[in-house]
Length: 219
Image 1 (cartoon, rainbow, N blue to C red):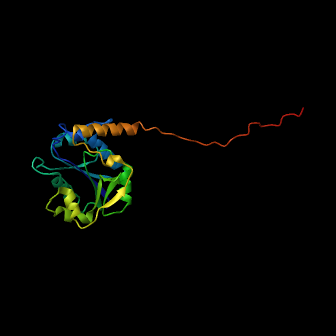
Image 2: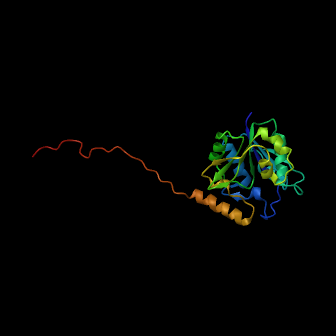
């Protein structure tokens, strides 16, 4: 089997005041960026749980290879309910899942590869002392999470699943930036633009050639 990715994108974006998954950062949308990063890291089975504006989002990502599931009760349920829909579908189809909400779009493929290389049953990236996303959840933990009562959401279920969360150090502030509010989104765009504008210095060393290539005649 293989590692899958689970992206939840069912929420109504109340605090943002706009439909977060389709807001653009650079030349592509938030949702496209998350999918592309997983694919760049070699993740081929990508599941997205949709709800609010589901048809619009699914059309937006058509042709991307994403498997769509619906949380039809998105108006009255929480993110953890969307997580359960995804885990229930993936049970028996993968060895582990990388989970993230759709509104954390700037983590890197290198971070995904570091999480996978850890071989941890339960792991999250940590940058500058703060934990972020995506989270690795081994398939053995799906059932305990699916059976959990949901107090405290996914965080609470993970804390009660019987396996300790392993923190994987990464130099990737993108694991921490979300887009809950317009101010958050503005900060995301600023961070994205700052990464594009980073100076790159290339230093090359060359073997010196002798300045004089022939003997001068004696006077």
